[in-house]
Length: 298
Length: 262
Image (tube, rainbow over all chains, first blue to last red; front, side):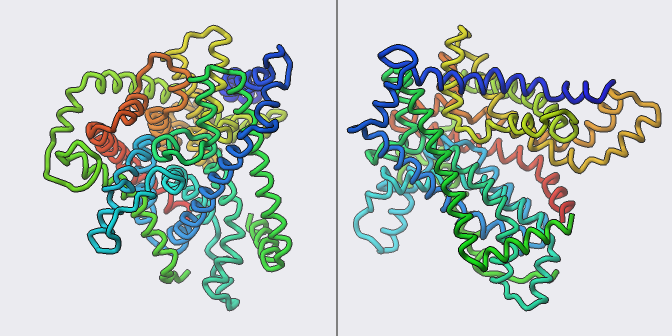
């Protein structure tokens, strides 16, 4: 059997499926977004969405802002934890057990994971009951549930494992000898972390950020189950256009706008990070040192 | 290298475990509480909700629907995803990087977008929305994850093993069946498990493309809208137990992989 033939055989089924049931649907959405009241093609829907007096840009900004805060929270949780597991814990069994525990809770599914927060943040939920029991508060805090904080807590809960797993793998692949060399040359633990581990793990953090950001901008469940009357998010509007207003072209337009806005947000984040890294000489030096180090090890 | 205790990352790791487990522990606790509300106080111990859950006909129907979908998705995604892993790692064809990248696109496009696009497409081409369309949608969603799981052991795979098998007289298919696939099997198995669980829990694609399909997430979604009966908590606790047992099955493998990559 010929090698080229075998190569194509292994790739064709999935590439065909991607073409028919992924590229084609996205193209379909794009086409449909241009069919307005004035026939096809028209920019009517986009005018309605982005035109004057529309609250959609505000909804979009709110969605992106929420998703970015979820990404930052995920980094705050996952980077120290991944560092601890990958570089401070010796036992592979402990590492596997902690990751498996997070994976189990993750695979229980977003719906159940989201609903669960009602019993923790509710009026007579875990947090209020404990705080009242300790005498910290007299009246239950009502603002915990049904608002932006609850939505962000649950969104982070549902997405941060992506960050944990990718950053853990990235840090696991860093050669321990780089850290040892840093220590031998007189760097303290904090310097080793900021100037060796973090720059080398940066690609993993980026992958994690995208894997967290993407599902978060499109989720319907958290705002619906925990959001109460806090501002609407883009995904809910899309769902409503498809299922309640039955205005598919408008739904398609909102979808396309959300993808574009998400892409722009990620691009902007990349540019800001790169600019910060260049501005701060320290990080710049650390990144260059890191990349040459990784190159010579290969 | 000498390792030392760092209190800050250790504290964050501990907090992360509490954060991960708190909701799971809470709903499991309340699934045994006699009160019909998901709120304190705990007033006793009962298994009534589990009895009610198992007696509820809708749950049984939904379970059958969900398992049917997830099992079909698992088989299709595992086969197609494993093949694609071979393409990504081994193929030598023009534009391979572009084509391989194309295959991972579903990872970076929101599920809701995929769901809406599929609904529009299925309706346009006249495919009736139902089990078939949900399975198709879930395969698109789950396959890249399978490919990722199989790619890791495939990159580590020593091609000399294939050459040895060939020298000993095995044809390409015999080599694949008796040498390559058994070595990759742990990765394939984890990928299959992941595909099953992803499909089993997926809500958005089922909601958009499955008219009349009442999978478990869709049932839970409609139940929680009407006040969240504790049977849902019992379901959540039971499904957690199932996932935990499945995870125990792959834990030794994860440990071995982590040791190997040290």
